[in-house]
Amino acid sequence: KGTLTRNIEVSKSQKGNSFTKFTLKCLRDDQGTRFDYVGCIAFGEIAEKLEIVGSSDTKFKIIGNLQTSSYKKDDQKIYSMNVVVESFELLNE
Image: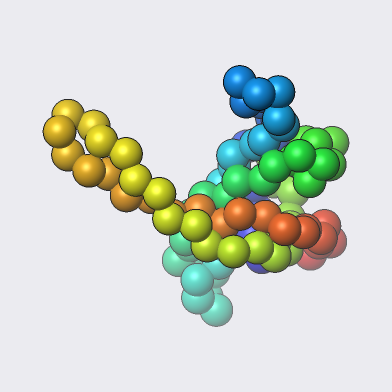
């Protein structure tokens, strides 16, 4: 569960497939003082639905899988981890 940090915008891949990348601000502790920022990515119909309802400060419950990836930058390997969204639910908290 988390809150969007900015509006969701869908992009198209070179093959014409829809996708979006976004970040959820997720509460880490009961006092409401510590947060994690979780990178998420969604594809196709899910991405398009998220764009319709996904404005900044919208609260979501995301269900998906962790995916790791890497790339080279300045001869250094950079690793990242994102949640690949399989489904979502709007929250009214």
